[in-house]
Length: 96
Image 1: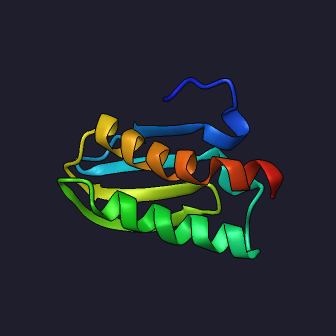
Image 2: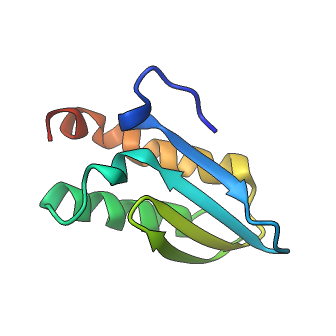
């Protein structure tokens, strides 16, 4: 989990599912941005970023705020990838 002074904007967390090759990545800002243009962009960018993590073999939307990631990526790498997306969009997310 990444600690931040803006958890509703920059909060992300990666944790194992207990299965051999599964992770869940939670992106807290996605709770507030769903089908509007910014929410769609956030989801698209998040999917691309998580797929690019070394060892990730599949990325699937679990629900509006979470992603299932299969393969053997590290939790740290998944957290960094998710954080880079929300950090890049932070100004727009604050005003959205």
